Amino acid sequence: MMAEVNNIPHIGNIVGSHLPADIFARFLRIMEEEVVFVGGTDEHGSPTEVAAFKEGLEPKELCDRLFKVHKKIYDWLGISYDNFSRTSTKINHELTKEIFLKLIKKKLIVKKKILLPYCENDKRFLPDRWVEGICPYCNYESARGDQCEACTKLLEPSQLIEPRCVICNRKPIFKEVEHLFLDLKKVEKKLKKWIEKNKHWKKNVRSIALSWIKEGLKERCITRDLKWGIKVPLKGFEDKVFYCWFDAPIGYISSTIEWSIKNGKGDEWIKFWKNKDSKIFHFLGKDNIPFHTILWPAILIGIGEYNLPYQVVGMEFLNYEGRKISKSKNWGIFLDVENEEVVVKIGEKNIKLNPDFLRFYLSYIMPETKDSNFSLEDFKNRVNGELVDNFGNLAYRVLTFIKTRFDSRVPISKELNKKDEKVLKEIKKVKENVKKKILNLNFKDALKNILQLSDYGNKYFQEKSPWKEFSKDLESCKATLFVSACLVKALAILLYPFIPFSSEKVLNQLNYKEIKFENVDKFDLGNHLIGEIEPIFKKLEAV
Ligand SMILES: [Zn+2]
Ligand SMILES: [Zn+2]
Image 1: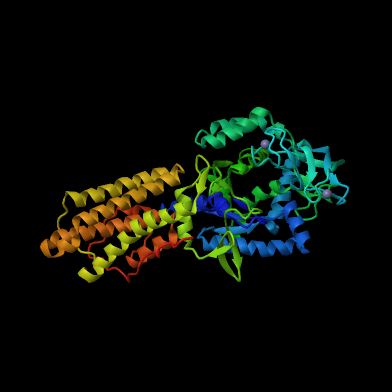
Image 2 (image 1 turned 60 degrees about the horizontal axis):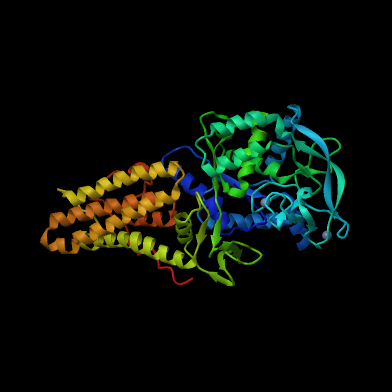
């Protein structure tokens, strides 16, 4: 996903793209699949130019600063991008121009005169987003000139009813200017066939894509009257730049190329973007579904060289305490960087937070099929109840027991009874379920399945009470600890895509280095020497 550089991420942005993509990438890596996970900041476009103007900066200066903020936040959260790039890189400039020229060759670019909003009061053309008005489709009263947030329809400013300039609230006039358009009509048939073929897409994604096709595709403007952006390499249009939706997705390819170069991998990016066996996954919020199922594939179909997305994962929206997250109303949980440190902001407060707690709860409530809600009370209860008490305590108790009673060596068990065997069977079962669910992109269910296994393990440990067995039946006690250690290892590996920092902490304490999915049900810990122990989590205090 390309993150809009001006939008310092909040929990909704995290859960909409970066986190699910990271869970998936981490899972594929421990499955030992070949994976490259790329993203970057989407830096062009009017919001950046206007924001820089307001701060008295050059857009590049603003983007340099904001890029670092984004990068720091994703690093803090453990979003394991193989390459996090920017749409303003030289590679992306060149590739965008190259792709544009290919589209011209294929006769997919047309010139058209359009009416653009111009504010006579502010004496400037108004970028799409600086015009608001009533949505012609759903009557939402604050629809932006580029898209209606309420119904996700893409708009042109001239479609808005009662348009107003966002700067001065006056009614803009419309002036005629010539611009370049991507002729979607010419690829409509192919696009439709391709969308219909993608039966593995989620319902919400397919239905949004198909409703676009059903309405009939129109030409889509790809140029803008701005200075900050990728210059259009065509006579008569030198003073224009590409609209950021055109160059932002091309940034996915550019970021992969950059990754190849940085890592001395030559042309390895080609394998991902052109090899028929590779699969492209996009993770994004539902407002970005049309871009990734219609416009971006239209470009790719148009030039016919690169792989089309295999899967477009469009997350529904996340609310905060029952209401839409809003930066301007300071409603939500926002991440930022202050004095070089990542801070989590709730209202006026900065709070200290274990990034895994945020990852855990966001995964727990992930809006996969319908909108969901972040509630602080629920956040605290789930984290303390289902992560700290359930998994954290189990791991700590088991490891401490092995350390104090068995001199830090997982006992070898001569004989397992039915209860012990059942736990190992459960591990195998959950492993298969989790694999199936994650590959089906049902992350929330996968996580719940893992937590059930942990819960089951706690009950088993309590029931067998090894602290009693130790003096009464040492062999059974050994079996309990052997099985429990295998279970802790399994849980830590299964949880790795969701809470990587804590998972690694547990595996370190267990002195188990190989985080591979196939090791989940390798019961290979007999006589294994564990490492130093400490509590896994500190409980989440009131936030
Ligand atoms: Zn609308
Ligand atoms: Zn104005």
